Image (cartoon, rainbow, N blue to C red; front, side, top):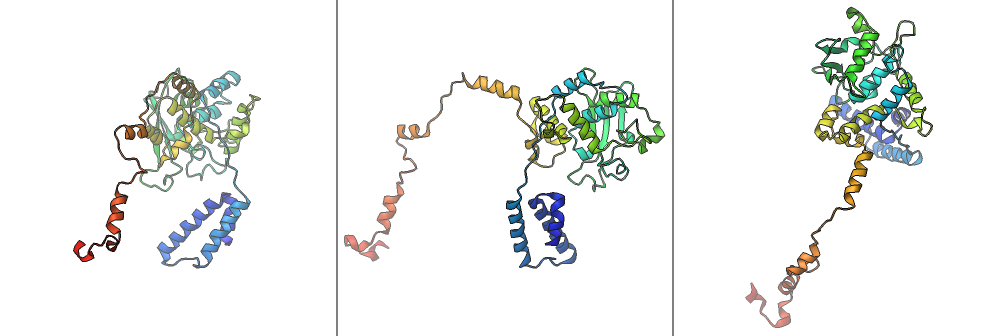
Length: 331
């Protein structure tokens, strides 16, 4: 019970706490052969967590996707490729095009970067054939889920990002600009964060909260938009939504986003233009539906309410003595 209350402030959701306790029980049984919970205690713990979830319901945060329109407006308002801002803007384009989870490209704090299991350094980016004229680049990221940090056989999956000089958003082009305007010697790339502060001593890594504040300052320029509806996960949602609008097959969206289940469907938001198009096609579209009831009546097929077997069954199970029949003769 104390363990559950210890986990509750961390995970907020009682359902998540219950899942972690169940996992801990399974591990304990596997390694030690016994359950650490009394059989009479666990039902009471489940009832306690259920009561807490009823008393303190979790309000789900609504996250809106970042779209290409956001990037176009931002380019008109800020010096997008300037040396002072290129580390932030390149990170945003990489998060969008790579469908990255926030933990896969930014640490919680600058000091935690060196020990961050998913840290990205300048050595994790390769340009093919060269930085000056790349055809594509590879960014070696560690998936934050599906055993990415603990998979010792393939813990770095490369993102292949082609170069496009005319696209409104292109991660390879943004990373090339980053490497050109913020160069790092080749022998120091492994110890240099991919996205760093140039105006701070030691050029530390840019942390989660700093990226989030920069994003919401850009969003807040539009007075009709609530910045609290946007987070760093909005880039991942926006990338999946853009792929859906482009006609990308569902299995490719799942592969590009490194989803191990069909949860990617929740990230693919409806496109406004598609909604308008289908509404316009709905109005004049004539349909000739096949009415099941009309067909049954036309061909004298018994409906579900008519049971042809009921009279026969009633005759078979009727008492033979009622009509004077010999019961033995029926056998």
